[in-house]
Each structure stands twice: as structure tokens, then as C-alpha cells.
Image (cartoon, rainbow, N blue to C red):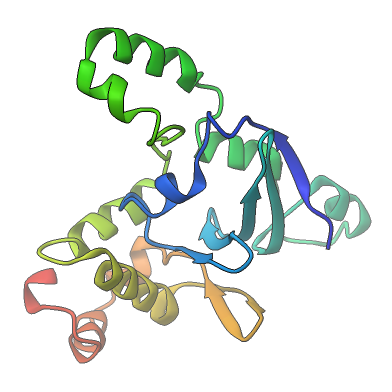
Length: 196
């Protein structure tokens, strides 16, 4: 599978700091290959970076690209531009270097630390998933929150694909999480009663 490229200097986006910092809980890093796999916008992504590019592969999606839409006119999937989805998610239209420069001029501590913590971005996440992740975060650590979010997806999300022995699901629609039997299932899955 070939890698798609988005022009993005490594000083503008650091995957490890951005994806593992507690904003999103659906990304896992393969330390051997320095690649990330995760789910965003009903799509399973594989990401890596080099000095000048964010590289990505779409492993599976409930959307379809424009090329696939033309080939399969009967497809019920929604047409999407995967480049634009990632650019929006990482907010790549924001020149982070300009902000780092401005903040460094105003804050001596930031000036010292920004060299080590460069390229950390605020993700533009889907509001429902973000809200439920926040609810899961009550008195929990990142790995527990990740487990809870994955359980929500596994039980109530739509299956996207299987890849290298793992099954990936979209974040569930609110209507599915509002079903009466959800609380019983999630209590069995070790969610706290206060979650409901």
C-alpha cells in the first residue's frame, strides 16, 4: 500500500506529542516502525512523519474517496477528501511556528520548553466522541480512558475493517448509546455507575 503525503514540516506537527498527550484516545504507536494507527472520522488511519511530510494510509473507511466513488457508482458511502480530513483534524491551516514565536517573545518559560515540545497541536475532534471521552476521563489515566472508549466503540460502533488481527470500529452514534440496555452492558464492562 502506498503512502499519501501532506506537506508538513516536522516543526509544525509532532505526532508523538499530539496523539499521546490525552486529547484523543484512539491512537496507538508502533514503536518499532514509529507509525501510528488509529480511528478518526469513521476511518482507520496509519500515520508516520518525516522532516517535510505527514504520510498516511487509509486502512479502511466508512467513507469513500472520489476515485472509488467513480468506479463504484452504486456505493452508499459518502464521498470524502482524505487529505482535507487530516488537514482539518490536525488544523494544519494554522501556522504553529508563528504562534510559537509570539509566545516565546512573551513567556521565558515557554521559550525554553518549546524547543523540546515543538509541533504539538490542538486536535479538531468530533464533538460527540470528545464529550464521551471527557466523561470517561473522570478520575482515570490515559490507558484506562483509551480502554473505555474502545469498549464503547466495540459494543456500539459500526465496524470499519479488520487489519493485522485487530478489528476497528467507528465511534457510536448517540442514539445507540441512549438504548436502555447500554448501562447494563457497560457496568459489566467495568464502567462506573456514575458514568450513567
